[in-house]
Amino acid sequence: MNRIIPIAIVAVIAAAGAGFWFSQSNGEAHAEQTQIQSSGSSSDDAAMADTSGVIEMVMGSDDAPVTIIEYASFTCPHCATFHEGVLKPLKADYVETGKVKFIFRDVYFDRFGLWASMVARCAGPEKFFGMADLLMKGQSEWTRAGDPVAIAGELRKVGRLAGIEDEKLQACMQDEDKAKSLVAWYEKNVAKDDISGTPSLIIDGEKHSNMSYADLKKLIDDKLAQ
Image (cartoon, rainbow, N blue to C red; front, top):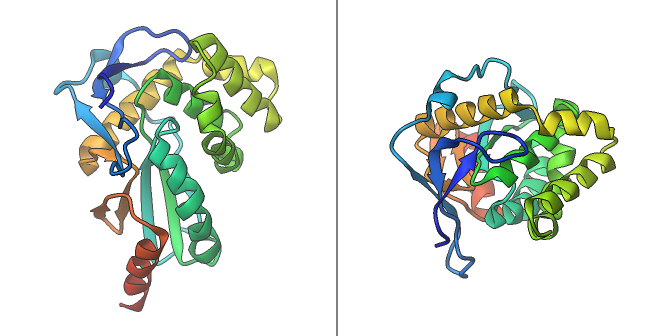
């Protein structure tokens, strides 16, 4: 395990730590999830933040018979693998065919994951999943760009690829109130659903750990057959 580090609640400059602390997997082959460790108490900033403006990112029909919530971080390697190997065929086979409603919920291991989320959300819900594709696909590059300034620069490049202007990107990444709201929203979600690692799935109210597409497909087909 890497050392435990606090997430920053300010979008560009690390400031006060939020209530949850995190440790990331060291990348060994047997590790299938990135683990979350709680400090046991929420920060005052997060507890007081207004989360009413945070938008739930959703793909698929509201009338879909199966609902899947994924808890994921843009800096979690296992989430990037899930995004490419599981979410992509899931979208084609079940989301776009009206069988599954898919919800993405952010998890923040560090300030870089928070920045990435704020960039992904900058262009609005319509472009969020396209931005998420770019961030997950390029994760190994932008997360290793160097110091925080270099990483922020790489995230801006991703935003520009999606057509977001520099002025808007800067405003999104420096929105401290939004950062606090996202952290508070995240803390409430992981506490409510008892999330301990990423990626984690809530499928029709039942919690599941990371799994292969074959296993997920079987689980969904069983539910659809009921």
